Amino acid sequence: VKLLPTTPPPGPFRPGFWRSPLRGPWLTALFGLILLVGVLVMFLTGLLSYAAYDPKLGTNDPTASHGLLGFYLFNWPAHPVWLYRFTQGLHVTLGLVLVPVLLAKLWSVIPRLFSWPPIKTPAQAIERLSLLLLVGGAVFEFVTGIMNIQYDYAFPGSFYRLHLYGAWVFMAAFVAHVAMRFPLMVRSLRKRRLRDVLATDVEHTEPDPIDVDHVDDGPGLVAANPARPTMSRRGVIGLVAGASVTTLVVTVGQSLAGPARDVALLAPRDRSPGSGPNGFQINKTARVARITPAMAGPAWRLHLTGGAEPVALSRSQLLALPQREASLPIACVEGWSSGNQVWSGVPLAALAAMAGVAQPALLHVQSLQQGGEFSQVTLGRNQVGADEALLALRVNGADLSLDHGYPARIIVPAAPGVHNTKWVSTLTFTP
Ligand SMILES: Nc1nc2c(c(=O)[nH]1)N[C@H]1C(S)=C(S)[C@@H](COP(=O)(O)O)O[C@H]1N2
Ligand SMILES: [Mo]
Image (cartoon, rainbow, N blue to C red):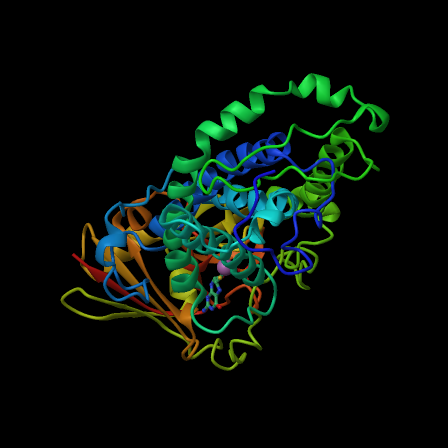
């Protein structure tokens, strides 16, 4: 062990404080490799979610100008119809499943947080700053993401903005961290074979050889004075894997829908299918959105604007138009999906033609709901032009329930659930 310039204060700064014999480059590298792959998938699916939410429009996007971060936005496709259900189900499920791995990784490197002296060289100071953004960014992204999939998002500020900006800060630190540590990760993984580790019981578990950190030349991860192991490395791996698999089992059903939903005990939105004939879960009820039966009663009209003359249609006039069926899921940004439901209604393309806008580039949808982020949305050309894109009047052989958007709602393929505006009052087509 290298002699330190000044004696560290008692406690976690003392080299003898951290005594787990399992801590060391190999275990850290293993968790690091899993997170490396996992974080890249999370980042990609997260960016896709922003592209899906805001198909180059700006109107769905509270970050008025995208600035640089919008560089990759593209027109989100309408096919395959399960596209967003897949990318966002993967994003949310993977995020939950990675929580035990993240905690294990943080546990494995915690002695480095207390290295002494705290800042020794400029290189080490830069690495420490990047670690602050790395660990802080990771915790921030996980906490805001998990809060957003719960019923009450209690974080101050718009999730949309915080999670996006947080992700870019985190990724900058992540790239720097990977650049600095990747060769060490590879070297460390080569020191033990996973197969051998999985075959080693607690009696035969040996600490890694004492390591020196290559960035600050100080003590590494291995305990200077290791305790006797009370658990093998395979035990730790099993514990983390078990926690991840359990998390998977109690959450993935919310994205898969169908019978798997019953096992999704920790998925907040999928245990309340809602009353009434439509038989699948309701995100926001009519009562919460302050929609009264009177607002949705016989006086309701659908207004079509954007063409030469505004058009107003009653619900019975809409039902008298040619109806189309489409089997489509609702797939919420929160990761849950309704699974496929059979919707029927008037194709949006037919309504565009009635409005006098033959091939609309944009459709602005306004709900009866007053205020609230979800009371309006703008859909792009791909969504409006898709064959399955409907102003739905019925679902699963019954009229829409008031909670599911009676008298009429939008249902479009492959898009985030929030685009399927309920209680529609006005459709404005832009050529
Ligand atoms: N007017 C209005 N439409 C809305 C919402 C809303 O809050 N208000 N929620 C949206 C969201 S976020 C989702 S996921 C779907 C859920 O539809 P459901 O309640 O029929 O399951 O409706 C969308 N349409
Ligand atoms: Mo949603």
